[in-house]
Length: 342
Image (cartoon, rainbow, N blue to C red; front, side):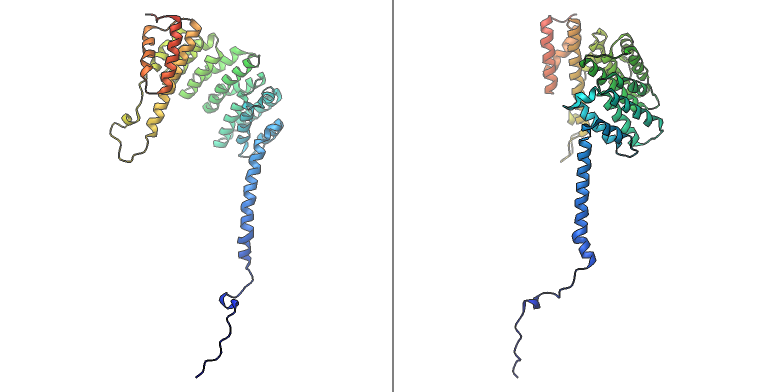
């Protein structure tokens, strides 16, 4: 039997039959990537728009008056713009500060709660603190007095310290310093240690008899951070009552990470972040104590007592380099004055 002649093989024989593309295939091929690109472009445009709000101060006001969850981002951007290179004009804009204060008051009066509303209040306080106009003072004073909202009160108290410094740098001053100090003194009587701590810091910036009187009380507070901030504030005011809390700060021992666990670390154990955080905070407290002591020496032109001087000298061998450097600077300052007192 003879084989029939074979048909030549065509390239089409090696391919599946060609069918028109389905609608689902076209959606996957074109529509889905197009949506992804559109979303990316939209997000980029949103951030670009928010980043350039500073070109039009009223754009901030319009954005902050909209009832949406992203308003806090505009408040944050405004605070950053006020601190930025082009913030000088914004800082002096009394009408903008007044409008922001009104928005802050309305947000508080609205009764809205939750993270979004709280975040907006905090960033509005921060933005008001970056101004250099008295128009920003009263809204912050009102919020500092509001004991029902300690988080916002704390943000307002901290903003008053920044605002006061900005006013002095701009050749201005608080129009009612006693009233501002009274509001911060009132805030310092709150039950939140963080609020009392921030109040102590701000009272040191504000100064005045009422501030110093309250700081003398806060220097004996049960919370460490409150005592320490009160001591630094008293040093800023040139008061020797600062020496006791400063001496306590200088005596804080180092917190080696390995010793914190109380036992040898397990094999392949990660870094003890909690111990690292405590060590960092201790170093920060000691460095601030040394800086506060330097301020006190500058204000009184007197060397510290022998006990405090001994603690400063003991920090020469501290394991943290920043502590050693700060201690060396204080020692040089003391040497220019002479030996310590007994």
